[in-house]
Length: 115
Length: 111
Image 1 (cartoon, one colour):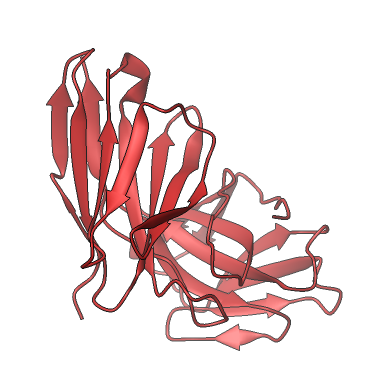
Image 2 (cartoon, helix red, strand yellow):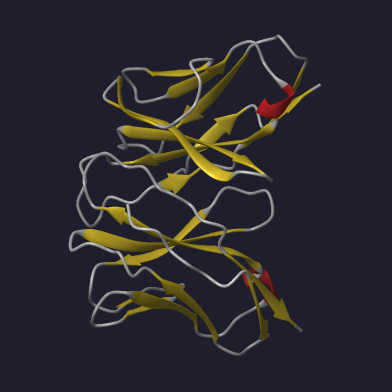
């Protein structure tokens, strides 16, 4: 079974621009979560989507948004980029129904650099 | 979710068992202990998880104390490729998932 895939793997943007990152979950998984990882703050939860609805949200400004499509693929958008948005953005998928067997599996991440 | 405490770094000789401890004294009854590892700049890799019983899979073993306030991840025969940051996370088994990562333990396997 193919793992979680993220595109692009690397991205360079300038301040003020916006960016869209994409995540394709493991086949059959309906939950997609997004995380930001920076050297200073570590891995932080952004939001989770399940069946095209945002089910859970972390403590990030409204410039960070996302959506999920009917095939469970998800996109994350960051508007008006700031230097501090430079980070590794990770996507994780899971079945989404809870329970002992419902584990999150991570993709390789998208490295975003804001200049 | 309950908070976890891990040592910032550990060394282990190649071929020996690596025992990584984690304290989670405020864990509640329905919370699981999850272990992930992250090799430099890659996505975290799931290793194992458990509720109260010890668990073993092809990668590692997880030993959870009877009071569930601490656990140990055991890599039975560490290799150089096991050098990574290991994260112990406590989280609900509920459907809405939000993993709260701490600082983890940097495990260095020495030749």
